[in-house]
Amino acid sequence: MSLKHDIEFTLNGVKRRATVGVGMTTLDMLRDVIGLSGTKYGCGEGECGACTIVVDGASLNSCLMFAVDCHGRNVTTIEGLASDAKADALRDAFVLHGAVQCGFCTPGMMMQASHLLACHPDADADTIKRGIEGNLCRCTGYKKIVDAIASVGETAK
Amino acid sequence: MTGIERYVVPASLEQAVECLQQLGEVTILAGGTDLMPQSQAGRLKIKRTLMNIRRIPELKGIALDGDVIRIGALTTISEIMRNDLVKKHLPVLAEACDHFASDQIRNAGTLGGNICNASPAGDTLVPLIVLDAEVELASKPDGKVYQRTMPLAEYFVGPGKTRRAPAELLTGVRIPLPPAGHVARFFKFGTRPALDISAISIGIAGILNQGVMTNVRVAFGAVAPTPVRALHTEEALEGKRLDAATIESVANVARDEVKPIDDIRATAWYRKEMIHNMTKRMLDHVAQA
Ligand SMILES: Cc1cc2nc3c(=O)[nH]c(=O)nc-3n(C[C@H](O)[C@H](O)[C@H](O)COP(=O)(O)OP(=O)(O)OC[C@H]3O[C@@H](n4cnc5c(N)ncnc54)[C@H](O)[C@@H]3O)c2cc1C
Ligand code: FES
Ligand code: FES
Image (cartoon, each protein chain N blue to C red):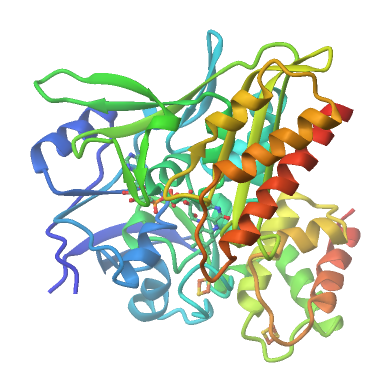
């Protein structure tokens, strides 16, 4: 039996508790303990970005984060973007630009894009390309994704 | 699967070094970007106690302390890259952080983790070595907190191995403020721009005065089991006028000084040629600046 630990944190604006294995990833906690499956498992090694979440205002790979380290922190997943007007604009832009094909990278890509736009509201294509270096997409060839993110940046101005 | 028996989250430096002293077998957790994949893949076994150091205020922040810039061990790569003191006085470190992995990894990964993971390819190590950085280590062997410092260049023993004693915590890094005329360059060569483990990296620093380099520091990453200072290359450059002949001979010394290995990322021959060509290019660049 592996050691368990109780944690308390804010998930998508709501305080909650969870009992997690001490060696467990935040990704496994989100999907298997809490039951939010929007955050995806691609590689489990920090290479693909499908598991991207935002913790205390910074995007990171939930597959690399110890679940116990969520204690006391403010965690946002793709499910939490649903109530955010800027995120609505981003979602509409992804649809409009055809930036979603199979959709597997989309939650992570949206999380990274929303963090990127929070840091650089008027990001140009180069900044966007650098910002999503840690997010792999096997379908779109990235151009549609970059266009979608850029369009939201511009309209935000 | 895991044999972790205890999880501790010290709230102060003193508590942390007490835990290390008393509990013995402790694995330290900072950002987890090395620890998590290593433990998930079974390359590393977490010891009986996992100690999360993320809540220790003394390990945070970047500050000017007299003529030294002190960077706390918990400072993330993103924080270093965006920090004004670093950008102004240590641009070579900011640049190395900018070429580090992805935004997500930079937001989670810490400087202390990069140093203590002791990969020969760790991207902050070569720039910090040529900046004469020292590591700060704290411990509490007999009821009192002790601090010692050690040049970063002497800290590494082998891949994943350092001179840190098991009861010590790395609390930060101290970097002397570079004097007037100081130049420093870092070059990382991989096969992809981001998210790549360097095939090789080079750092060169020194004081440039009327075309002559002094106080020369040269270090290489990923050509040996640890990041290394290149003393022969430094000597070949020290006090010399940076003209074409010097640059060529220094680049030759650099090529002869490294003893890289063949691996899946590059052959030894290729790495030696890269060291030669990049040393030359970097010095050309310094000479023209
Ligand atoms: C996909 C991917 C890409 C990466 N790309 C790069 C890259 O481009 N360049 C690069 O250099 N690295 C890279 N890394 C490695 C890693 O992100 C960095 O080494 C990072 O800085 C580690 O910091 P951390 O806080 O996450 O360390 P952790 O994983 O928390 O710790 C790493 C090690 O250091 C020890 N430790 C941590 N802090 C302390 C302390 N204060 N005192 C004593 N021991 C301590 C831990 O016990 C552990 O052994 C990459 C990793 C991944 C997964
Ligand atoms: S699943 Fe986390 S980066 Fe791929
Ligand atoms: S849409 Fe299929 S991976 Fe990006």
